[in-house]
Length: 201
Image (cartoon, rainbow, N blue to C red; front, top):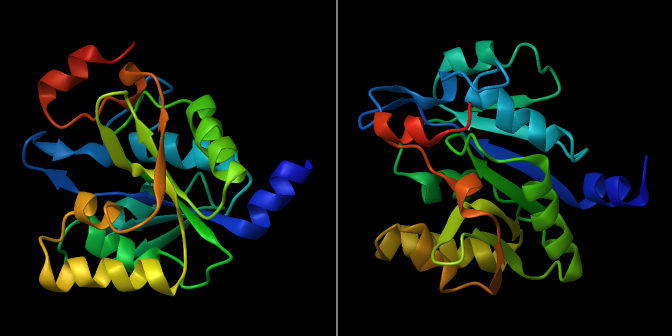
């Protein structure tokens, strides 16, 4: 094991946010088949496992647990109600310990490659006090990033959830962060059937 992998194991864990049936897509995006012949959920979970960090999947759908039976190292966490969007989910998994951080990833970026995750990890290691957020050069993709844990980020997150819009971007304005530019084509967020036409075969 390399020193990078050892450091990653001791300071960082990862979480995939795995939604269920998408009204716009018309089906469960987590179960769509990737060009690797795995599901989208297996694809992103497998990439994160290659970073040698503990990986969990946050979902409210038992079928996602069945989908991950080929990846026994991935821990599946069933999200209890209320379900109020990704920031509410983040509040449940972000570490309270300021010496640890969470690598987050959505299930619906099937073009992501290991090098993209490694670029985020390298940037975070330059200053582990800052959140690191993926960007395509024009807009942030906040669900793909690394977030330091601790009481302060939790407090600001809960303020946004209780008194604000509950939007992830509003929380970002309250925490120190930097962006890391990644290829826009690999940050494609697939929400509609037409988006599938842009995927590499």
